[in-house]
Image (cartoon, rainbow, N blue to C red; front, side, top):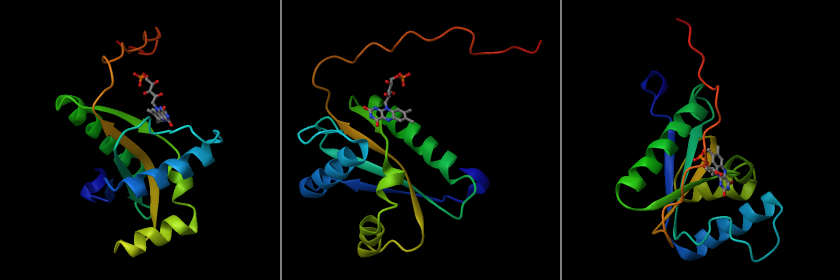
Length: 137
Ligand SMILES: Cc1cc2nc3c(=O)[nH]c(=O)nc-3n(C[C@H](O)[C@H](O)[C@H](O)COP(=O)(O)O)c2cc1C
């Protein structure tokens, strides 16, 4: 993390009712119809937020997400980055939720890491585009 600030936090949502509440608001922000679950049935949602005061907060939070997904994979779990945390935590209700659970300050939502056991096989990674590394030799 930038300058050793440790300016990210993670909210681990395991409560089904709250998990469904986040699913609903995420679906609404994304513009999907009722019935679609943007978390694909995952029972645990790890929400990463960064201190708005921290200049490297977004990058720090993204790195937390990447590491979480690798850690999940190493444990045999499936995980996926689900977006729209920024928009969620711009809503007064969600900033209040932070206060309710004792989190002070101003936090920017970075992403949700939806975690669960995979239903099926690990999907194949998409073919990588060419010419994305430029060498200065
Ligand atoms: C910044 C970011 C945002 C993403 N947001 C979503 C999302 O909101 N919903 C979703 O289903 N997948 C989301 N994903 C997952 C990507 O769709 C998935 O990583 C990609 O299709 C797989 O390609 P990859 O192996 O190159 O990452 C997101 C991934 C990243 C990195």
